[in-house]
Image (spheres, rainbow, N blue to C red):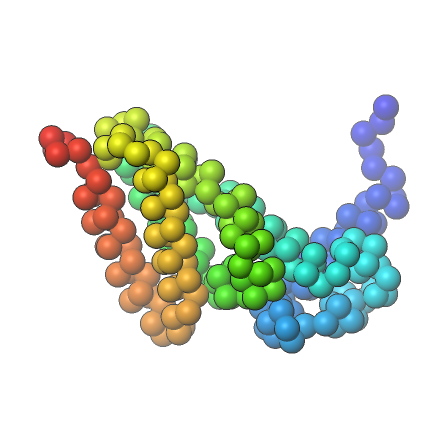
Length: 204
């Protein structure tokens, strides 16, 4: 069976990608409540029916935008972390990439500010866990396996770190543009201290 996609399939994929790109820009500029599907269709130069062909409604479109942002973010964080062979350095590089991502205006607004409003708290939380929890768990368990933090209550530790990162993400998203560098630097220092405090008593 041929793996070559038909022109119709290629056009459909291109249309969906264009809709996501347009919707991302409009949601970031106007917010979820201030953006209508007609706005997205018009800016993408497609019919409203074309939008509904790919997405059940505005909420479904926003969730697709969120998923796209999160997948790209997790890839960047994982790539940054992979440049180090030591678990501690890897985690710190991943943390820096996370802080950089949360300081980015579009990501910050859509993921941390508009997400809970658009999807509702429960669904937004499910999405965050789907895309970010696994990577957080990977970092924490790697630090435990390498002896950098105590292997005590691993599930609770992962939950704690995940919640802390979420709080930091929201904090950076809410910070004004002029304040972001300072807030980011302070968050980097504090979370490093927190992780250092989880080291085993006999660790050097």
